[in-house]
Image (cartoon, rainbow, N blue to C red):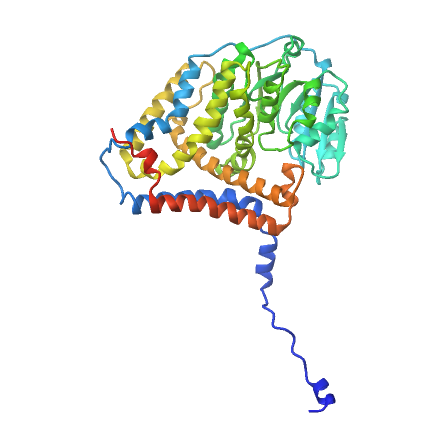
Length: 476
């Protein structure tokens, strides 16, 4: 064959697998940030079914006292704590109001649907120059709405996160006190007790209630009232309120500026971290709960609620585990703070592992579930009857154990999300924890796959080797 013939021979292009455009686009737009959170309910359900059928060999309708010592107390911790807190109720704090000492700071991202209502509510009481909105990379009409109300608008082009947006706005504050507010929180006529900060307290929490719109919000209304009117109020005597809600909080400006280099900037649990940093300070002025009620808009469906808890709230619980442990061992910390730290770090985070592993026993031994349900409802009824405000419908109490079970699922999803985000940040070598969003897709996929596989393996190994029986199968 001549050279001319060789050159004339057509050259076949290398073989390439043609992936359909629909599949390519689907993979391109996959949100790996949500994979761990949404995978966990399926993993827990599959584990419950496999353990129940393979290890327990189906349902058992007679009591087995070998499980009683561990299982029933394991699921009644929250109810027992609520009844205990009812017996320790204290009064709210209230003092003089001087709005001239307050600047309102709102970190807002794409909040055009709600920011107008919030600003109109604020303008009834505050001058426009005392309302600062830090637009955290908003791509909608947020800034136009803020300027239309005459308020101060700090337009941050990049989405740097809620905490860093708040820190950015602090330089524009000219008053001694700051009211941190979510973009959907309405203060109405709620008193702003600046007199409490004048006394030397570092921060003031408010009684945050939810606007009831659906039957799902009625569970949250009961939950919020328990937290504000029972859980937090008992801490007023020693100024040891554990968490100033991210929806609203009144702070000393000097304390917020002190925390600029201390706060990690992570959105999940940012309010809890801010409050714990106050209690860990060497010059702790304390945190109290005011007799001021404000309204916030809660998730209206269980899917929205799941997203809020799994991707917003509960990862912050695990992120603040180190702060809880520091409260446990730090000197000169009030007993009430140590008790809260022990509850969150041991009785919630620590015992959740046993609750996850023991869930099949509770399901496949219906007698245990019935005992747990009746005891939990009885404990919640005590709380319900002792509550002196608006109680809400009693059917919420009857269904509250199932709401607690829903909370268990959300905490597992949140734990997976927490591990995923930490993995992405470490692999990407980012400085700020919330920067996991801008990591490359390979790192996100690898982290999501690793976390889901690791947690699934823990459950699968328990099905194969039954090591949870060491903790749950206690012989009397």
